[in-house]
Length: 242
Image 1 (cartoon, rainbow, N blue to C red):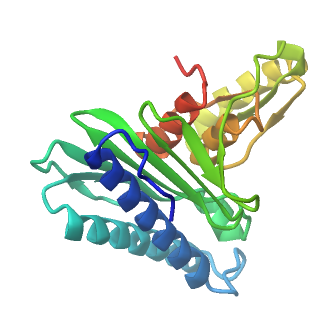
Image 2: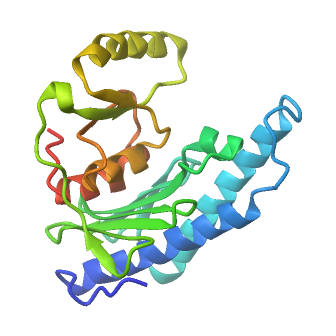
């Protein structure tokens, strides 16, 4: 567990520790609970049903763990968690960002947990279990990661590159009309860039931007839970997200 003694104040220290604990436990649940034979071609419905069940179970684990420690907090989660709370703190949760990757057995999926205080994101944690990496940020405290390297690593975005030297990531919506427009945008951008990537997890894309693995990232049609934690991590690493 990350040492949070340098967090700006006791509340943020508590929120960070709790977010890290919840993200790591949910990640373990998803990683270890994924059926080895979860195959896309098995049937038309059962693989999707299993993924949905895992998604819901991960969100329940997160909300239960947090509620036990902070019963007055609110929640906004992809799988339906929606309570106002009375403490001024709200948790924004994506229990499984990169669902299709998870379904297919690809490693680029994550658990994303952010904490808002009075409407402003103050803590963000993204756990990527199959990468063995966890990213976190506290407002004003920089962005950090743990992984295969020793200890914690402070994250920093790459210096701004000329467009023709930029590696940029994006994502595509599942609504056909939106995807068609996004494909048109990507087609026009590709000749102008070094290259383009499509990872499948907005949270991880933002963390890769923070880690200097990408020069840029863009995507339309995202929800608050897709980006809340990753947005803070990228901003604390120096990203200009507008």
